[in-house]
Length: 256
Ligand code: 48H
Ligand code: FE2
Image (cartoon, rainbow, N blue to C red; front, side, top):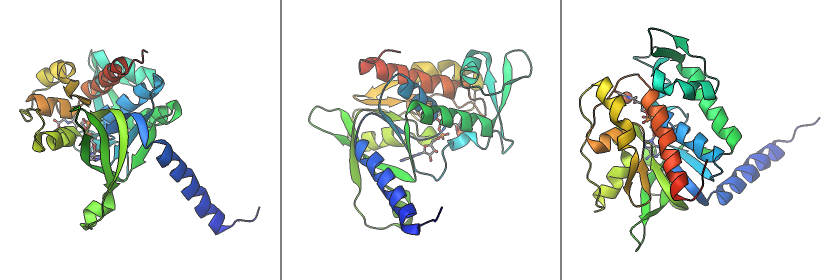
């Protein structure tokens, strides 16, 4: 076949524009493409929710790529092994209850499953604000290209509407901080010391709706709650992402 450069350009523009127009209104907007965000997205999509995930960086995966101190391995405990199994991620048994998975395989298989289930990924887009109207609920996101923010260009953003937002932005709990900064009643206690047992044991209790329409999961959930950090054990991230998806689905009237 003969290749035409303009057709290639048209294919990309037409396809992505169509997707962006379609996702101007969605059920769930997940902010952050780390382990908790991807897991939340895959379960939301599998439950039939229209879900878009915004990731400010070029690549999806957040802190999972780097494993522990750049050794691309993550540890997952017994309670979360079923999530690895569910997505076909190989888990090597270490000592009883501890499994080791490869970072690259974990990110890739979770992301692939989310795509297959219908989640849309928007990488290179930074969420810079939220929409809160008279009803006091978070009902949308304010988004811009990450390079605009990086270059400090004065370019106004665009907005998307959604029925629920999930803050999966990791240690920074960026979206929760935005809401708090603008006067929303959302106390943020800040992350505590390293204590894996505590941090992993309590994360599901911290995974919740922290402001009308805004859910937190993953490290952001612990950061908001004043809970400890856990180091490169990722079971809590996977389970928290799944829990957030279940909560959002229940709130929006979608059952598994
Ligand atoms: C778009 C944004 C924005 C924004 C941030 O850090 P993550 O991997 O988050 P989690 O919670 O899924 O996983 C945490 C885990 O990686 C970790 O750090 C652990 C377990 N640490 C323990 C310890 O002791 O240190 O991913 C968050 C993602 C990143 O990719 C950011 O780029 C992205 O969110 N992000 N995307 N708009 N405003 N802010
Ligand atoms: Fe971390």
